[in-house]
Amino acid sequence: MEDTFELKVIARMRCDYTEKFGIPRQSGLGQGPVGEIVFEEEYRDANALRGLEGYSHLWLLWGFSRNKSTGFKPTVKPPRLGGNTRMGVFATRSPYRPNPIGLSSVKLLSIEKRQGMGTVLIVQGADLMDGTPIYDIKPYLPFTDSHPEALSGFAGEQFNKELKVEFPEELLNAVPGDKREALLTALSQDPRPAYQNDPHMPYGLEFAGLDVRFRVAEDTLTVFEVTTAGQQHLK
Image (cartoon, rainbow, N blue to C red; front, top):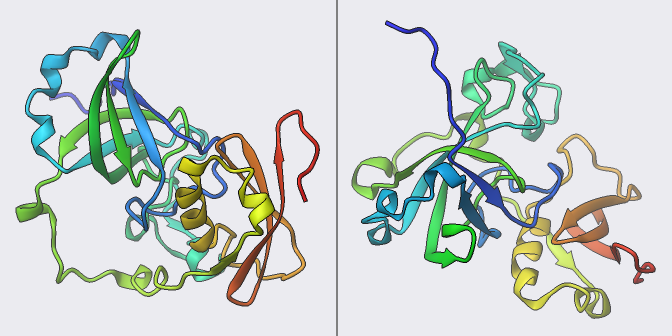
């Protein structure tokens, strides 16, 4: 019996998040961003997707591609606990695992054929960065995968609070119309590390080719600047 095996990248996520900061901490929070799953050429066989149109949600198994060198840590400091309290790595979704594998549930919006790309899956709610390798896709089965009575441990009460987002209209106009809802959702979930609470500290979130700068005071996030590549600051 083999103790190890090779994981093959079957697809990659294509989305508006180009860096780790600001990516939703969990899949399915709020409306979430819309992304595309583009299959590697070897796996662009439409037969492999036959019947998938009958499902509304999917499980994605993917790789922490930006954390490969971190290695295994038996305990970690979850950001949502302020970065000072240690928990066992298997009680968290930290990337510091024996195998750098992530698991996310996403909503399947459509299945489209694209020139030169084969069949592409359009999904919503992924907590993945652009270019993230995907190892497998499985259908989400509500009759067995959903457990409303399940306990959420220390994480349960950490995701209930949302920030009020103040986004001046002249800055919001710099964001493409079809990207605004996802951006506002990401900002309302407070992308800052939980242990940083300086109301004067500026933060920047890269999203859809934009650099969105903001500050947070108490329960309000205020956007004060939006920049785009090759253009002057829009204040």
